[in-house]
Image 1 (tube, rainbow, N blue to C red):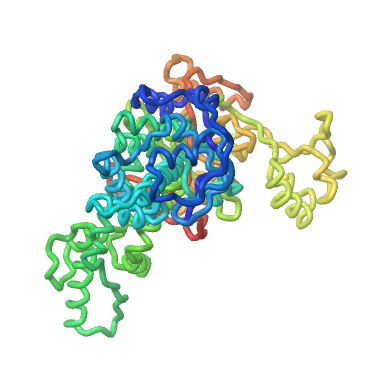
Image 2: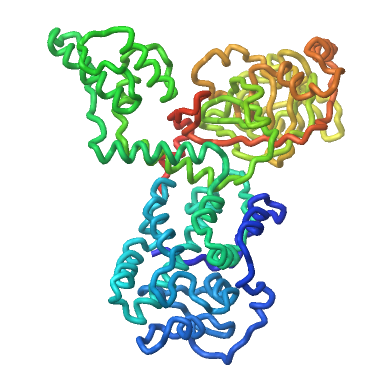
Length: 561
């Protein structure tokens, strides 16, 4: 079973909106401050390993959690070596129980048990929060069959479950995958879970507390509702597999296959409405096109092999995808102050969000699977017209050095690259080879054929990730657009620059175009505070709010927990 984390605080930014909301929501009248709690002291003694039936609940809590109790804590047979989080919560609550009283279960306990039953719609496993054991103990208490030991165990189990769930909702439950090298998005949830449990109990807002600990991005709620919808479909039998038809099928077999296809589509998408026709008609083609769009494949309205393969993805796989993406949202910021730029890597699109609506949208080219884009949050620092380009280490190692080894310095000339020493002095190509090139800076002059194109959007980050124009305009008409070496290439750079600088009359599209034609580098600082969130989610929402299932470009969904 899962044990409480050894640290007592979820360490985050103290100005987090979530932190302030939680503090203002929960009343603190019955909780002593953490400072006061730390100064309470009782004579040192060893923590009891079991609860005696002669010991009432408060006596047991004091014996376990007074400020000088020592030794491991046991709950339902599990040994918790570092019980500081639970200890702090009970000291703050003056050793009073949270979940039971003289009449039995509190309303808050019943609410939390029901919340645990529903937590699977967050993509979390209720068994991680001792639901079965909690329900058994709760049943004994409701039926007046509980001993003191049952009461005591139930109280601790509930508190441990609440604290574990709080941690998982605020920070994510899978820290191993969160710490992968290409995921640099910080979590901003500033909250002391001991304080949360104490204040939630006193205010009675257990369900509201849980809801506030969930990510506040609208994707999360939509993914959860989609999870619930598919889970209900699974309970009614789900859907059957569709075999790809062949030219040798008889007319009757084809008609039967069309009926099966219609029924399969209808189960998941409610289209087409006619599920009994054995004919290929426009409504069937439209239903296929809708399915293709929501599953992020080319929407041609044809029952091709790619479409059939997507139709044959089982419900459990789709539930796992939703669970993966709700987990990723829990790793991220829980609060997204607007305006912000949302770069959806798997969808290969960019959105500018302001006033709760999409103000600008365009296609982007993202990092290829061999060089995945780094997921990060970064402030948009400035916009550069006619940017120069210095070759980064990865491209130097994997492209430039092999290029010189194969074609000699003709490679540099063909790519428009120039080599400079550490003093900025131009180095003659005759002195360059595939070995010593690593000792120099390799740069490309500004221009529409530069690798950065004519516009660059600088982001404050240590990984040299930014948004930029590209000479490879042909890529934007393609459905699959994972071709870059990690940075984000944008489809409409000049239009986007004009949009971002719209508070100034100096930067109309025509003016930006004329600036770029000079080939002189110009930096324009951003006066708006705009954060850029580069995210990898294999679910998204379309313009009507329907959940989409995207191609797992980097195969991250396949990584086991």
